[in-house]
Amino acid sequence: MLTLNELKNTKSLTTKLNYHDLYEHAKTHYEMELKSDIEDTLTQFTNVEYKLAKNQFGFVIIFENLPF
Image (cartoon, rainbow, N blue to C red):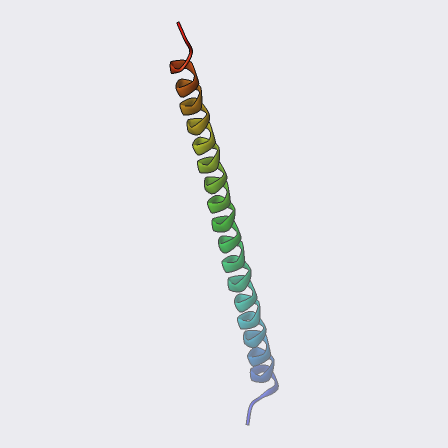
């Protein structure tokens, strides 16, 4: 049979494990959000690069077709 101190220690250890699980869950969620934010930013940056290149190409095509 468990003594009162052993029972308290068991409850304390269980509580620590629960907090550890919550911490790990929060940490994983944060890392996933951070990764998602970085991927979104890179996607937006790539889209801007594409649009800039498309505009520059269009400018060159129009410029080349001007009668001089």
